[in-house]
Image 1: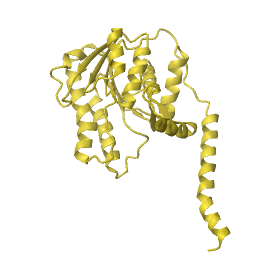
Image 2: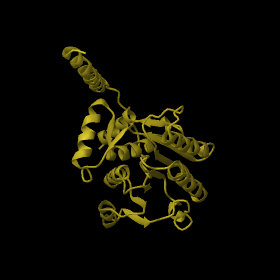
Image 3: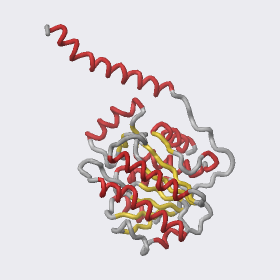
Image 4: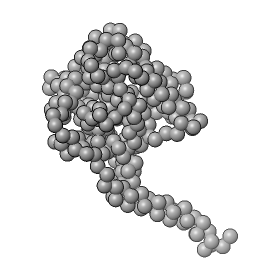
Length: 272
Protein backbone atom coordinates (compact mmCIF):
# COMPACT_ATOMS: atom_id res chain seq x y z
CA UNK A 1 0.00 0.00 0.00
CA UNK A 2 1.49 3.35 -1.04
CA UNK A 3 1.73 6.27 1.37
CA UNK A 4 -1.15 8.44 -0.02
CA UNK A 5 -3.56 5.50 0.15
CA UNK A 6 -2.43 4.70 3.71
CA UNK A 7 -3.11 8.29 4.75
CA UNK A 8 -6.58 8.08 3.23
CA UNK A 9 -7.35 4.85 5.10
CA UNK A 10 -6.19 6.36 8.39
CA UNK A 11 -7.87 9.73 7.95
CA UNK A 12 -11.25 8.52 6.63
CA UNK A 13 -12.63 7.34 9.99
CA UNK A 14 -11.50 10.58 11.65
CA UNK A 15 -13.13 12.72 8.98
CA UNK A 16 -16.37 10.72 9.20
CA UNK A 17 -16.39 11.02 12.98
CA UNK A 18 -15.89 14.80 12.79
CA UNK A 19 -18.70 15.09 10.23
CA UNK A 20 -21.09 13.04 12.36
CA UNK A 21 -20.13 15.09 15.42
CA UNK A 22 -20.79 18.37 13.60
CA UNK A 23 -24.15 17.07 12.36
CA UNK A 24 -25.01 16.09 15.94
CA UNK A 25 -24.14 19.56 17.21
CA UNK A 26 -26.25 21.20 14.51
CA UNK A 27 -29.23 18.96 15.29
CA UNK A 28 -29.04 19.88 18.97
CA UNK A 29 -28.81 23.60 18.16
CA UNK A 30 -31.80 23.38 15.82
CA UNK A 31 -33.94 21.45 18.30
CA UNK A 32 -36.21 24.18 19.63
CA UNK A 33 -38.73 21.87 21.26
CA UNK A 34 -39.65 23.03 24.72
CA UNK A 35 -42.08 22.10 27.46
CA UNK A 36 -45.40 23.94 27.53
CA UNK A 37 -45.40 26.26 30.58
CA UNK A 38 -47.53 25.21 33.52
CA UNK A 39 -50.58 27.29 34.31
CA UNK A 40 -52.50 27.69 37.54
CA UNK A 41 -51.44 26.80 41.06
CA UNK A 42 -48.39 24.56 41.21
CA UNK A 43 -48.24 21.88 43.86
CA UNK A 44 -44.71 20.60 44.27
CA UNK A 45 -43.96 17.66 46.57
CA UNK A 46 -43.12 19.06 49.99
CA UNK A 47 -41.64 15.85 51.40
CA UNK A 48 -39.30 13.72 49.32
CA UNK A 49 -36.69 11.02 49.84
CA UNK A 50 -33.41 10.45 48.05
CA UNK A 51 -31.52 7.17 47.86
CA UNK A 52 -27.96 7.17 46.52
CA UNK A 53 -27.20 10.81 47.35
CA UNK A 54 -23.52 10.04 47.87
CA UNK A 55 -23.09 9.14 44.19
CA UNK A 56 -22.72 11.34 41.13
CA UNK A 57 -26.40 11.49 40.11
CA UNK A 58 -27.72 11.45 43.67
CA UNK A 59 -25.54 14.38 44.72
CA UNK A 60 -27.03 16.44 41.90
CA UNK A 61 -30.57 15.43 42.86
CA UNK A 62 -29.91 16.44 46.45
CA UNK A 63 -28.48 19.78 45.30
CA UNK A 64 -31.62 20.47 43.25
CA UNK A 65 -33.92 19.47 46.11
CA UNK A 66 -32.08 21.70 48.58
CA UNK A 67 -32.42 24.62 46.17
CA UNK A 68 -36.17 24.10 45.72
CA UNK A 69 -38.09 26.51 47.94
CA UNK A 70 -41.18 24.30 47.85
CA UNK A 71 -39.57 21.12 49.13
CA UNK A 72 -39.68 21.38 52.89
CA UNK A 73 -38.25 18.04 53.99
CA UNK A 74 -35.77 15.65 52.39
CA UNK A 75 -35.19 12.19 53.79
CA UNK A 76 -31.70 11.10 52.73
CA UNK A 77 -31.05 7.38 53.10
CA UNK A 78 -27.37 6.60 52.71
CA UNK A 79 -24.45 4.41 53.65
CA UNK A 80 -21.95 7.26 53.41
CA UNK A 81 -22.29 10.85 54.60
CA UNK A 82 -21.13 13.67 52.31
CA UNK A 83 -20.55 17.41 52.89
CA UNK A 84 -23.74 18.24 50.99
CA UNK A 85 -25.78 16.01 53.29
CA UNK A 86 -24.23 17.70 56.31
CA UNK A 87 -25.05 21.07 54.77
CA UNK A 88 -28.65 19.95 54.35
CA UNK A 89 -28.86 18.75 57.95
CA UNK A 90 -27.57 22.13 59.19
CA UNK A 91 -30.20 23.91 57.11
CA UNK A 92 -32.90 21.89 58.84
CA UNK A 93 -34.16 20.56 55.53
CA UNK A 94 -32.52 17.11 55.52
CA UNK A 95 -33.31 14.21 57.79
CA UNK A 96 -30.30 11.95 57.44
CA UNK A 97 -30.51 8.20 58.00
CA UNK A 98 -27.53 5.88 57.72
CA UNK A 99 -28.84 2.57 56.42
CA UNK A 100 -26.88 -0.53 55.45
CA UNK A 101 -29.30 -3.24 54.36
CA UNK A 102 -31.22 -2.27 51.23
CA UNK A 103 -33.18 -5.50 51.24
CA UNK A 104 -34.73 -4.71 54.63
CA UNK A 105 -36.47 -1.41 55.43
CA UNK A 106 -38.36 -2.39 58.57
CA UNK A 107 -36.39 -0.06 60.85
CA UNK A 108 -36.81 3.05 58.68
CA UNK A 109 -40.01 2.60 56.68
CA UNK A 110 -42.18 4.66 59.06
CA UNK A 111 -40.28 7.73 57.83
CA UNK A 112 -42.02 7.31 54.48
CA UNK A 113 -45.63 7.56 55.65
CA UNK A 114 -45.90 11.16 54.38
CA UNK A 115 -43.28 11.03 51.60
CA UNK A 116 -44.75 12.07 48.26
CA UNK A 117 -41.86 11.31 45.89
CA UNK A 118 -38.79 9.11 46.04
CA UNK A 119 -35.74 9.84 43.88
CA UNK A 120 -33.72 6.66 43.45
CA UNK A 121 -30.10 6.92 42.30
CA UNK A 122 -28.51 3.79 43.77
CA UNK A 123 -26.35 1.93 41.31
CA UNK A 124 -22.91 0.58 40.50
CA UNK A 125 -20.76 0.39 37.40
CA UNK A 126 -21.15 -2.75 35.34
CA UNK A 127 -17.36 -2.94 34.93
CA UNK A 128 -16.15 -5.95 36.89
CA UNK A 129 -19.58 -6.64 38.41
CA UNK A 130 -21.08 -10.10 38.15
CA UNK A 131 -24.71 -10.47 37.08
CA UNK A 132 -25.97 -11.61 40.48
CA UNK A 133 -24.55 -8.59 42.32
CA UNK A 134 -25.64 -6.18 39.59
CA UNK A 135 -29.17 -7.54 39.62
CA UNK A 136 -29.31 -7.46 43.42
CA UNK A 137 -28.48 -3.75 43.50
CA UNK A 138 -30.41 -2.58 40.45
CA UNK A 139 -33.50 -4.78 40.72
CA UNK A 140 -33.91 -6.28 44.19
CA UNK A 141 -32.99 -3.14 46.17
CA UNK A 142 -35.64 -0.85 44.63
CA UNK A 143 -38.26 -3.61 44.42
CA UNK A 144 -37.95 -4.36 48.12
CA UNK A 145 -38.28 -0.67 48.89
CA UNK A 146 -41.39 0.07 46.79
CA UNK A 147 -43.11 -2.96 48.31
CA UNK A 148 -42.40 -1.70 51.82
CA UNK A 149 -43.28 1.92 50.97
CA UNK A 150 -46.62 1.08 49.37
CA UNK A 151 -47.68 -0.73 52.55
CA UNK A 152 -47.22 2.27 54.83
CA UNK A 153 -47.83 5.31 52.62
CA UNK A 154 -50.69 7.58 53.64
CA UNK A 155 -50.30 9.91 50.65
CA UNK A 156 -52.97 9.78 47.98
CA UNK A 157 -50.56 9.73 45.01
CA UNK A 158 -46.92 8.73 45.29
CA UNK A 159 -44.19 8.68 42.68
CA UNK A 160 -40.99 6.70 42.31
CA UNK A 161 -38.37 8.29 40.05
CA UNK A 162 -35.80 5.71 38.98
CA UNK A 163 -32.50 6.40 37.22
CA UNK A 164 -32.06 3.64 34.69
CA UNK A 165 -29.56 4.09 31.87
CA UNK A 166 -29.29 5.57 28.40
CA UNK A 167 -31.95 4.59 25.86
CA UNK A 168 -31.37 0.86 25.97
CA UNK A 169 -32.58 -1.83 23.62
CA UNK A 170 -34.82 -4.49 25.10
CA UNK A 171 -33.32 -6.96 22.62
CA UNK A 172 -29.77 -6.52 23.90
CA UNK A 173 -27.95 -9.54 25.30
CA UNK A 174 -25.50 -7.43 27.33
CA UNK A 175 -25.73 -8.25 31.03
CA UNK A 176 -26.18 -4.74 32.41
CA UNK A 177 -28.76 -3.87 29.77
CA UNK A 178 -30.79 -6.99 30.58
CA UNK A 179 -30.75 -6.12 34.27
CA UNK A 180 -31.70 -2.48 33.67
CA UNK A 181 -34.63 -3.60 31.52
CA UNK A 182 -35.63 -6.14 34.17
CA UNK A 183 -35.54 -3.40 36.80
CA UNK A 184 -37.76 -1.11 34.74
CA UNK A 185 -40.24 -3.83 33.87
CA UNK A 186 -40.42 -5.09 37.46
CA UNK A 187 -41.08 -1.61 38.83
CA UNK A 188 -43.63 -0.76 36.14
CA UNK A 189 -45.48 -4.02 36.75
CA UNK A 190 -45.55 -3.43 40.50
CA UNK A 191 -47.07 0.01 40.03
CA UNK A 192 -49.92 -1.20 37.80
CA UNK A 193 -53.35 -0.56 39.30
CA UNK A 194 -51.82 1.16 42.33
CA UNK A 195 -51.50 4.73 43.55
CA UNK A 196 -47.80 4.66 42.73
CA UNK A 197 -46.40 5.99 39.48
CA UNK A 198 -42.95 4.94 38.33
CA UNK A 199 -40.97 7.09 35.91
CA UNK A 200 -37.65 5.88 34.46
CA UNK A 201 -34.92 8.36 33.59
CA UNK A 202 -32.50 7.26 30.89
CA UNK A 203 -29.60 9.73 30.81
CA UNK A 204 -26.51 9.16 28.73
CA UNK A 205 -23.36 10.60 30.31
CA UNK A 206 -24.01 12.22 33.70
CA UNK A 207 -21.76 15.13 34.54
CA UNK A 208 -20.97 15.65 38.20
CA UNK A 209 -21.98 18.77 40.07
CA UNK A 210 -19.32 21.46 39.96
CA UNK A 211 -18.45 20.75 43.58
CA UNK A 212 -17.61 17.09 42.82
CA UNK A 213 -16.32 17.31 39.27
CA UNK A 214 -12.68 16.86 38.29
CA UNK A 215 -10.86 17.65 35.05
CA UNK A 216 -11.41 14.27 33.41
CA UNK A 217 -15.16 14.37 34.05
CA UNK A 218 -15.38 17.92 32.75
CA UNK A 219 -13.60 16.96 29.52
CA UNK A 220 -15.99 14.06 28.97
CA UNK A 221 -19.02 16.20 29.77
CA UNK A 222 -18.05 18.95 27.35
CA UNK A 223 -17.28 16.37 24.67
CA UNK A 224 -20.73 14.76 24.88
CA UNK A 225 -22.86 17.80 25.79
CA UNK A 226 -22.73 19.55 22.38
CA UNK A 227 -24.33 16.50 20.72
CA UNK A 228 -27.00 16.15 23.39
CA UNK A 229 -25.50 13.07 25.03
CA UNK A 230 -24.62 14.51 28.45
CA UNK A 231 -26.46 16.12 31.30
CA UNK A 232 -25.51 17.61 34.65
CA UNK A 233 -26.57 15.61 37.69
CA UNK A 234 -28.38 18.65 39.09
CA UNK A 235 -30.51 18.81 35.94
CA UNK A 236 -31.80 15.30 36.63
CA UNK A 237 -33.03 16.47 40.03
CA UNK A 238 -34.65 19.54 38.51
CA UNK A 239 -36.39 17.38 35.92
CA UNK A 240 -37.65 15.00 38.61
CA UNK A 241 -39.17 17.87 40.55
CA UNK A 242 -40.75 19.28 37.39
CA UNK A 243 -42.15 15.92 36.32
CA UNK A 244 -43.80 15.53 39.72
CA UNK A 245 -45.85 18.65 38.96
CA UNK A 246 -47.09 17.36 35.64
CA UNK A 247 -48.87 14.09 36.37
CA UNK A 248 -51.49 14.82 33.71
CA UNK A 249 -48.68 14.63 31.14
CA UNK A 250 -47.26 11.29 32.30
CA UNK A 251 -48.27 7.70 32.75
CA UNK A 252 -46.59 5.25 35.05
CA UNK A 253 -44.01 3.48 32.92
CA UNK A 254 -42.90 6.52 30.94
CA UNK A 255 -39.21 6.79 30.10
CA UNK A 256 -37.33 10.06 29.75
CA UNK A 257 -34.29 10.26 27.49
CA UNK A 258 -31.46 12.75 27.94
CA UNK A 259 -33.19 15.25 25.63
CA UNK A 260 -36.43 15.08 27.60
CA UNK A 261 -34.63 15.37 30.93
CA UNK A 262 -32.96 18.54 29.66
CA UNK A 263 -36.30 19.97 28.51
CA UNK A 264 -37.97 19.42 31.87
CA UNK A 265 -34.93 20.77 33.68
CA UNK A 266 -35.13 23.87 31.50
CA UNK A 267 -38.84 24.18 32.28
CA UNK A 268 -38.06 23.98 36.00
CA UNK A 269 -35.39 26.69 35.72
CA UNK A 270 -37.61 28.94 33.59
CA UNK A 271 -40.16 29.03 36.40
CA UNK A 272 -37.57 30.30 38.83
